[in-house]
Amino acid sequence: MEPLKIEYVLPGEIEKRSFEIIGQELLQRNIHIPKEEEAIVKRAIHTSADFDYADTLCFSKGAVPILKELIKNGADIVTDTNMALAGINKKALAAFGGEAHCFMAEEEVAFLAKQKNTTRASVCMEQAAAMEKPVIFAIGNAPTALIKLYEMSKETSWKPAFIIGVPVGFVNVESSKELIRSTDIPHIINRGRKGGSNIAAAIVNAILYQL
Image 1 (tube, rainbow, N blue to C red):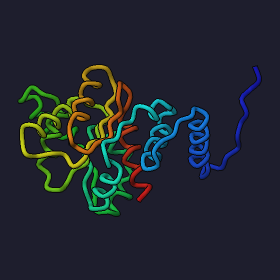
Image 2 (cartoon, rainbow, N blue to C red):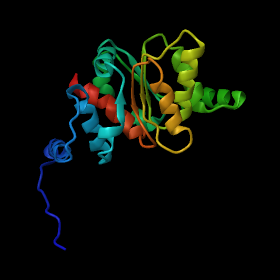
Image 3 (spheres, rainbow, N blue to C red):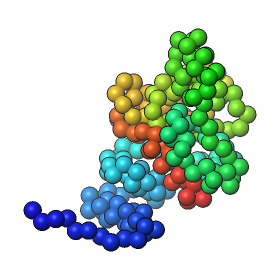
């Protein structure tokens, strides 16, 4: 077996070259992505090296323009993990007046979750719903966060401005995503078990880098 060819690429050119390879492989697989969704799908693939995202990422009607407008108008972002929070380009977000938040590590959240016999992710969604600004939810880990958002949107007059729903795992992951897909809440959801905090952050950044 011959060794694989090594490409000598300058550090600043690695991402550009990676996206060129992704584009070439999508063409080889005869996969054609709608123009407005292309940057998001490619960045998810770039983050994961998984071409399944070209098939499984689902966009509600007008999702990308809606998400762009929310960010341009200063919407905040709430994540369900500090990993997703760390991955979001907060400087780019701040340029539009938005902030990113994760409440999972707060002592009050842990206390309320224990008191209510629920998950910290559910409590975090309740806290986010009390924020006065429009909120974009970037959920990459906790299906209970998606379930809570669905329940609150059905039981109260409140609705999330946007949901990025890409939790990864096996328990309630697929069903929680389908709950959000059944609503009229603007969303980007990844069908199936795959996802993760890195994918949630990648989707946010794909929009920020276009703006």
